[in-house]
Image (cartoon, rainbow, N blue to C red; front, side):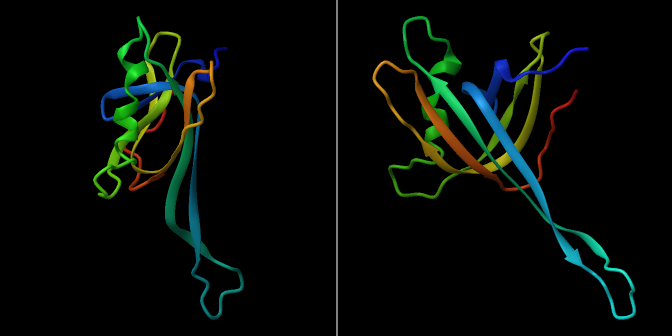
Length: 144
């Protein structure tokens, strides 16, 4: 029996792999609507508005021999951190892993980045914590 692991995490904006993902998670939730009517003996519910929010911990560097995905910080940050005062962009974000055969297993959705926190420590790899909220339903989900 084989298990998937997050050892080879990936994050893409559109088709550009932007960073090495160390951890990621998202939570999908749905409100419930009470549709109980007068005369019902039992409470009746139906699904309401769905929402998805998530986070990712990423790292990158720019050194001799660095590949493209390790130096694409601006492709990610430029969608939230704006120098011209415009609103944050909606982006197509894919989060997932690469399996044993190097096949991508991803979830793809249109999101709005809600925060990017970048701590910097001397001698450490540059990293960031990214938070997002989905702007619509996912267009793909991780396939086994």
